[in-house]
Image (cartoon, rainbow, N blue to C red; front, top):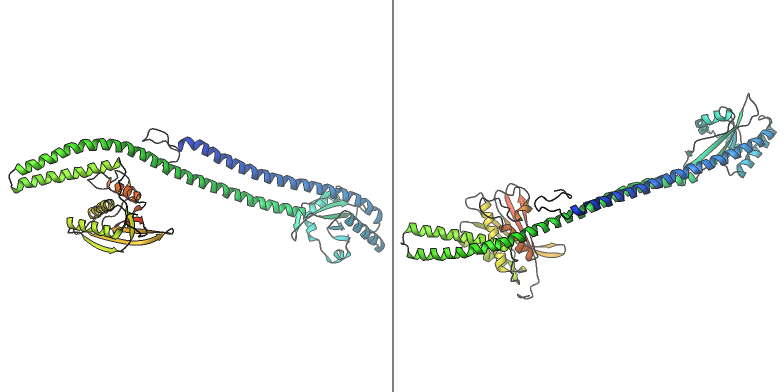
Length: 454
């Protein structure tokens, strides 16, 4: 059943249908807000990175333009030792003043000619320069060019290239290398933004699951409400019909008894009256079942040993059905607050169902009683196991009103049993036993044995 469908039986819209548009609107609004926040975060980080890179490019281009003018004045001959020393001093001054990572001069092939740090000049091969061949060619063409932002050994760097205009035959290019560690922080923020996206998706999924769970609970509540309304209306009608049937039924019973007394005492006539009384008894049971729909069980609750009540029910059933065999395993002295007559009614109904379901000519029923600790509470567990054909479909449907798999009956027996057990603050469930029948489990809360009337 869909959460947002219209009930066809009741002729009116379910409770959830009236709220479906609001729920869907909340989900869409939440999704849009999360999407907007993540897109805004990503856009902000991207714009910040672009702004920082533009600012770094402008700083490097300005530094390269001014530095090239100094070097063109000082560097006369790149081979002359004195000229190289002056150039190296100038490069160090440029490096220090502009807070650069490195400053050096290369030829058109990317070979380092002079480096601000003489150690790197002799022993260090800057192979990453080859990746900036496009920027080098741009510089050779007479324009200032900056490299792409690149990462090396966990840090970010950016280069600027400018032609020194010293010789057309052997052009030299000034390279200024700037450390861009703030981009590392930016990348961490970007990584974090991806985590936030994943967290947002998970949060939305959890919210969706939570809302679906809430809707399912509302749906169950609505179904119970609709069922209660139907049962209330049916109960009122059943009570009226049952009373109308019971009155003439009593007259029929009394008349039958009088006619039986006055009729001849032959076997055939007595058998006919026996059939009539049996059918009157069956109709009376049906009437009582329908009356149970219109009123709550009237319970006489007392603290008693539940095993005693079970033995009494077992004994009565055995007297009526001596061909039925039982396998008993009953734990003694389990005190449960219960109404003996009502529990007796439930057990007899379940015994009859077990016999009806059995495929054997001499059915056997397993009857167990034991204590079990569940959620820090102690329960008396009653198990009734048959060797019948088993359950087809959902076991929970067995306890719905008017649901029956028998050719005879109203389908109210197990529904009434469940009502009685629930009024005892207990539960009753049905379980499939593969290829061997059905198990009914009743759980009733155990009480301290302080007094019978408590």
